[in-house]
Image (tube, rainbow, N blue to C red; front, side):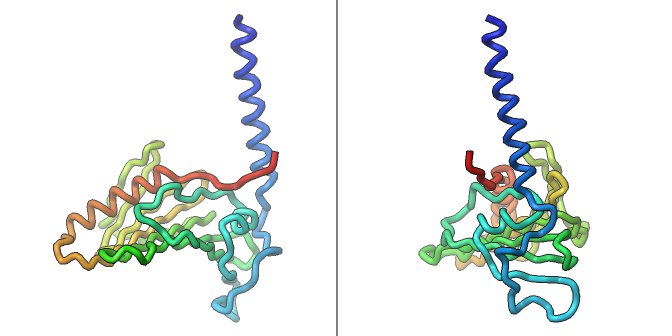
Length: 203
């Protein structure tokens, strides 16, 4: 009986190791530009390179680190999300992605925008002393910052720095500063707690 009970656990462990190995093997050591095209917004001089927006799938196959994206959005988005990739050192080692989630235009009361940034280097030391520390479900500490209808939540996970920016342009005169602050804080924490890996492999 004990052998029968242990066997499924061994198989599960072996599968987990195999899956992790495939994940690591699928990640390029530096930015893979084979499917990327430089944007006209890319500076002519200097090392920074900005690429034209691509699908989430292409971005995941190109960047040199695994990244999570939101599985929960606090509004109905257009569903046409594209990823802008920026190479900050020009050598494909310091890479950032930016994914804007825009609210579907059917909603008339608010105009909402959520932006996800993820990078494999530290950048967000710019937050001032008004930031608030919050605790995520997995025990990680995140930093929340709010100003004039827009808010930022940033945290580190497995050497990847994540930043969520949430902007609400409300047409409701009764939408108070405090309610907007509390709503955005709650929503950003919920989004951060529901980030998922999307890299897929064939079995």
